[in-house]
Amino acid sequence: MTPQTLGIVADDLTGAMDSSGYFATLGWGTVVVLAPGFSADADVVVITTNSRAENPDIARKRVKQAVRSLAGRVVYKKIDSTLRGNIGAELEAAIEELASQKTIVAPAFPVVGRTTVTGNLLVNGTPVAQTQFAQDPILPVKESHIPTLLERSTGRQVGVVTVKDIEAGPESLYCRISEMPQDIVVCDVTEESHLTGIAQAAALAEGRWLLCGSGGLARELHLLVRKTPGAKRAKPRNLSSGPALVVVGTRNQVAANQLLKARDELGLPILNLDTERLSEEDASAYLVAEANRLLIQGRGLALSSTFSQYAPELKHTIPAIMAEIATKILASRRFAGLFLSGGDIALEVCRRLGVSAIRVHGEVEPGVPAGELIGGACQGMRVVTKAGGFGTEEALVKSISYLEKGNLS
Image (cartoon, rainbow, N blue to C red; front, side):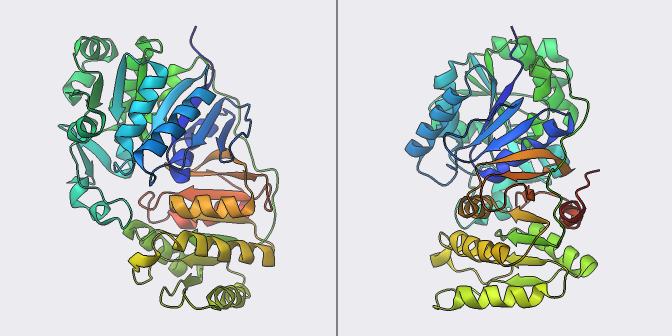
């Protein structure tokens, strides 16, 4: 019998969130779990292992534990749409735990510019290893060819199916993949309909295949679960008044453009972290005081490291510093909601607030999920999370509107 519930294992918080938002729009109860041991009874349970930047052995162990905890559900292995992290080690762990006959890998997410051609992952038409993701200060991407990356990291042979294979129809694709000698199969994808075809073919395997991909393929997982879409979308229960607090801890140019758009269109003040001052004893107190001064304007606030001078010696400590400042700002006055961009920053802020989970309500736009915090000092507060490179130029403007008014389109 086909399971009626879904489990997703992601390697960071923003990835967990962007793979879950679509299900909430279908009316499915959707919860992203942050705290170990937190029990969530929902149609869709997403676990973040926070293992993207860990060593492969730790990542492998965490994924195995997460998969075990999702027993009885259709399991999806969420990976980064730009191939950052311990993709091979984590995929191998999931394969071993589930004893999958085939593993289908499709990290493409066309609606946000990620496609796959001849096994190569492209970002807006450029091989990912030739984009700004190759310069990531913590996890630089050096390989665009997905089969090569996976063969090196798993020791398994990897095959590729083309767009032509997918467009032949789900039954044909199912037969094609079933006959291939490789355990792992990478799928070329250039448009959303190809992801639908992959999921339809996987449904014919009746649980014998493991699907692995980004938030793009995640949106098609409803085809694998025997469940009728709900009648209405969950809504935030705590509609606090006040401005939004925006915390952006990514240097991605997409995020920078979104910040500037919100500044120009909404008058959003931006408090930029001065990395040269962060080592000073009064740095935190100074930034909190400056934040409160800017908040008097009543237009909210963006706390950001996006425009700061890059300081490699601080790359592992900046998330903690930003989270400390953000939690102090949150404690100083009432906010309607919280916007978090950058997986490390999002997780660290949630940890400091004592958040156990996030109940997902839907999406501000594709790949930009919205919900409410469960547990901790800001219980019930509206929240939007976003991967640094996701979203249109208007994504932050739309997110602030949701946080302040509670409306999703």
